[in-house]
Image (cartoon, one colour):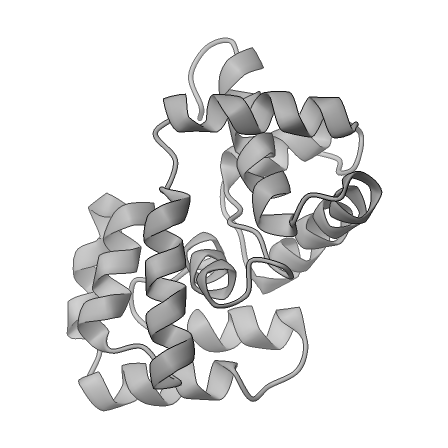
Length: 174
């Protein structure tokens, strides 16, 4: 499995996925400030969900700061994703990008491709196109197991799964 993750991680740069360096920069600002601003959340949302990112601008600035500050205080993946999903423009996949920016050693960016890759590898069952906090938990558990098994971070495993799906998928995404 280590070779599988390494091979697909190498492919990630050729995908349309979010750029890890940009997430790292946002994560660094998040850790330094203790929160993210509306503009920073918009920047992140634009990278992960371009078409719906404009919704982020409808959030009051103070709410963005409050929610992202509180995410650092709460325990549990479900609670963190659910809290972020309370912001306009944030569903579980975009929330997962916020968590991955903050802590790539514990979180992964997830979406339809990652779900499909985990299903193809027999970690999940059924096809999914929309995700909530419970779905994030369902995905991140096998991602963390793969990270433990291979020595890669959960963020890297997520990127590799995304690239794997893009590499093997025939036909359209949805």
